[in-house]
Length: 161
Image 1 (tube, helix red, strand yellow):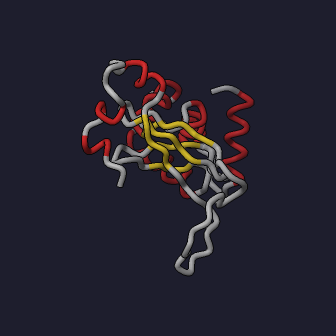
Image 2: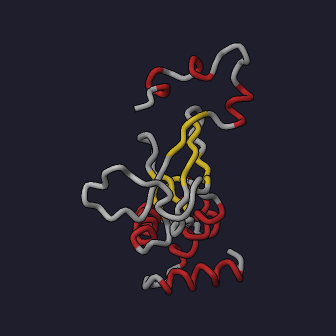
């Protein structure tokens, strides 16, 4: 862990009303360094600086930091949850159907919630979360040119519902 980064993480954790622990600092910094990472990858990263950290400690830290609003938990297409530190803006995600890569994309129009619904069913909407699906550059480059994108996906992956 680096000094200035660690102090910033400590300040964020403290400001969120949580007790500062080495595990929480390491988890927050691991997710900051690799957004859209799952718990197993967080454990691997944290284990480099805290070799004795347990799986349960990682899960507890991820839950505490998410509940405090310092992390956002995303579950995409039934895959293991991934975490990010970009929590207080109205951004969306692109997800690769082939490799599972998740990347942030800014809201296309205006400020939160950036989209209006025809009937909000009595809800006061303050955020819109959109997931765009397709193939990332690497997966497009790896697929044979003769196979159209729609045919290169399995029927389950090609379903748009």
